[in-house]
Image (cartoon, rainbow, N blue to C red; front, side, top):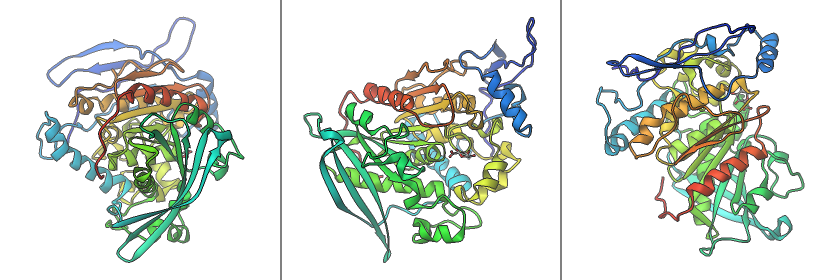
Length: 448
Ligand code: GCU
């Protein structure tokens, strides 16, 4: 039985105001089937910058950037099982609907990753106790995964604040770095906002990082694939359908770094967040969904296939992402090109897989490609699952203004001024959020 959600739908109307010829969106929150449409309010908070819209449209008229052109859509219901059962308890979610939801994303988007390797070995290649002018200890670690007679190795780095809580363990933020090494340089010869390690250390967090491409090249050729983890561990999926793809491989890499962090006595493994931008943000979300040891997930401008709702079709289409980056996703995902409404899930369910853990979604003003409002609404729609844990997300009409972060218990959101990028501002806000939620120590996490 196909799940449908009639709880909320976003409907847009065009209207003209005095002296202005413009398109404005009207947000209608539609109550349950038995209710009546109510609350017709113009979306509050952030509005697309008209200059950005005009510039985008003059470059490319093929894509939808205006709210008024978002089609009406119906989202699959996060809390209705495939057999129609309504989920009302945590137990039903954890035992039935959550596994079912994971299966949907494995089968139709990211592919089936291999199970955790039988053996993972770590070798600390270098320890530098006076990194960052004495503020941190740098460790470079080689991580070797061994299973069924095969092995795959890559390395990660972690800068650990030398000033740590009395437990001796610092919470950590792990960046999946899909950009070049200069963007995330643990030696700090190159210092860029994309990975502001000095700032992270000054705030008391360990800054962990690995190069996504050391796990799986960001390249669709067969030769490239052979060099990455997927060339060694094929995984249980079928290449014509649901074999694991590059985003899943990067998420797998994050889990192996987590394996290491759990062994490091200077790290508080109960407080490790995984962070990613754009394609790395998609991977961070999948890492958070598949590995519950991550206590916090931050996706920055993850857009299509990440946080934003696919059915809105605003910005990057399912067609274009699959045509340009087919190797990021499994083969089944391509079957939904131009058939977004038939996808058996939408991205609010990916966010829901992170519940009740901490989840921070961020967007940027000029990044219509990632569909900022679609990212926010996805977080809104993950609300019922957070609700099972007594938590909340946000109301559909609560999208904040530019650079006005919004948090509610375990979830947070902001939209930054400027371009598609990961900036100091984004890191500062996620650390403000982590400061709030990590005020109390937690118990040791179990295995994934
Ligand atoms: C492209 C792609 C996006 C992706 C982005 C990035 O723009 O279309 O889906 O998020 O690259 O990773 O920078």
